Image (cartoon, rainbow, N blue to C red; front, side, top):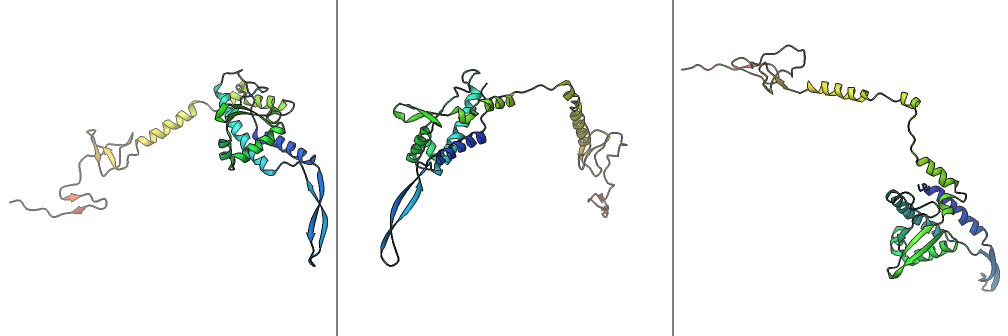
Length: 243
């Protein structure tokens, strides 16, 4: 089973390597010709750091790490167990164009950054013919730690453990949720707004609310002759004489 890669821990290990390399870079001093306000020239010593990795390489590595971890998790979920190990992890098949879109820079810049990361031993590549695609691996020391304990710890976190008998006693009963739904359904059956049944089992619009279980039956007769139900008080109309 492949261990889980923690992006933040892997990037933190890269930052330690990045700072250590820049600290070992050293400095050099050279003279620069300057012009004074009166028009005369003089020389001054200027000290600068050498063999430094630029800040933009960190951003490129972070984007490569994200792409690699996404491909790593997809491969680990699809491939059979035992095909890859922590010492021989799966690779990322990509190219400079695809990485330049992810890093928001030119493909030439991505190529130079990959060359720098390769010289540090952070990544390695394997090219595939004239398509300019290549497989890319990130150092397992950065992914899982130098001692390999981090990878084993992450692998243990992914293992599923069964509930013990004591834990099962603290879990709620299975029929609690079912009883709650039955109560809701029972209360919803008698909540038809404005629709009810008469004594003959006919349903339709009625002035009386719906009949619920246990309630006495109501008369299905409508308002008396000459009256109409208007939602409020009954209104009496004059009766026409028949000729």
